[in-house]
Structures are given as C-alpha cells and as structure tokens.
Image (tube, rainbow, N blue to C red; front, side, top):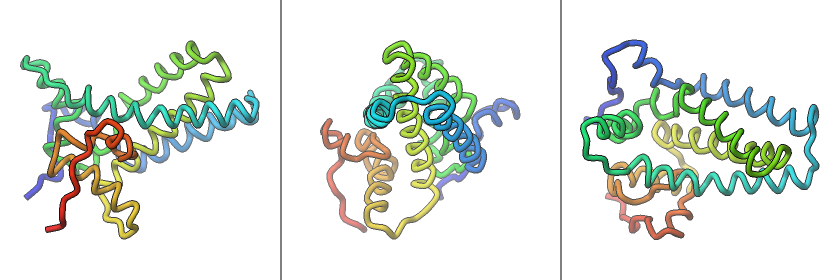
Length: 202
C-alpha cells in the first residue's frame, strides 16, 4: 500500500519547514499576486502593451523552466552520500511518497527566497517595468504549476482535458520516471521528445 506521509528529518522544526498546507499556499500566493497586480496596474502602472506582452512571455518561459528544472535538477544523478541526501530532500521523497499532501507544494522557506531572487534577476535583464511584468507572468506560471501539481496527486477529475494532463504527470511517477517531466504543459515533453508512449488502461 502506498505511503501517505514520509518523515524526512528527526527534528520536528526542520520537518515542519518542509510542509506547505494547501490553505497556506492559497492564502500566501493570493495575497502576493493581488498586491503585485495592484502595483502593476494602479500604484506604479506599466503601459498595457508592455504589461500584457511581458507577462505572457514570462508565463511561456515558465513552462520551459518548469521542464528544465524537473528534468535536469530534480532528476540529476549524484553519487556522493551528501548529494543523494540532497536530492532526496529536494525531490526524491516526493517520488517515494507522491500523495503526501503536505509536500505536494513547495514550502515557503524555499519558494519565497527564490521569488525574490528571480524578481531581482528579471529587473536586471528586462529593466524596471519589463522585469516586473515578466516576473508577474512567471510567478503566475509557478502558482499554476504548484497548485495543479497538488491537485494531480490529491484529486480525481472527470473532465477529459484535465484527466489527460493529470495522467501525463502520474505516468512519470508510476510508469516512466525518466519521461513526462512537464507537469502543467505536456506539449513541452513532445517538443523535447521526452513524452512516454500512450498506455492502455488496465
């Protein structure tokens, strides 16, 4: 029978830092995205064309970023004991216990510092207004990705399109761990020829 929870650390505090309850995730990123959208449109507005264009570009780039991170970072092969431990804490525990509802979402102790880092990076690359707009689209992509990832492991869908995307990721866990790296965008796997072949229902 598949485990529904896995303990990683002996320390209770370290263990808690790896959790992200879904309601905390929703509350946190709803506030962050709302405040950020307000600054883009009202308090420090960006021209509409630039806002829409750069946000769309940021969202598009997220789909490829999601794929690259999953394939080449989360699934990289390290031989040292420390390297293997790092990979297990980062992603391996999720493959061992895919339905752990407290670890289907990235913990805030990781996601918030990364968000700040990318915000600064995009400002340097695209300038003030372009960087803010690009970051907004990129961040929307992340929230979509993590929210969908949680739903994929916790719910069943009747809608054909949602079932198709869900099946794509679940095949990565239960059928082909070296295929189907994209979570929200199966078409990216098709571009890079890393999609597993369709399987019949048993």
